[in-house]
Length: 120
Image 1 (cartoon, helix red, strand yellow):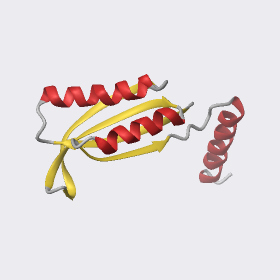
Image 2 (cartoon, rainbow, N blue to C red):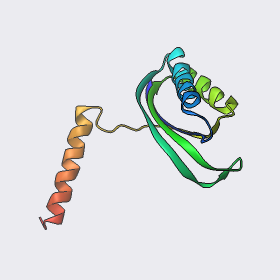
Image 3 (cartoon, rainbow, N blue to C red):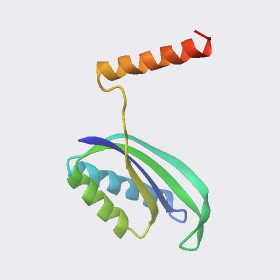
């Protein structure tokens, strides 16, 4: 399973209880389909860059999870069907340095950059 980052915008008109229920339902969708929640952050109410469904503000939620394709399919279906979710973006997180070789390569590149900047 790979790690994904999900950012979704919820209607700002929801009260705290409804918002909490929606966030919980989305997290339950992930865990019920074999996913694992790594981190969840409610970023708060923010002004949208452009109106979405005649709304100028939305409540942003950022979530990191380890999911399989089955969990992704179920999650996207739930997000599309929810009338409270204005927009969402799901991306795969590329983690460099998973192996020792990759970590050593990163260190070598950093050392070369430092040497070049110092003139050597």
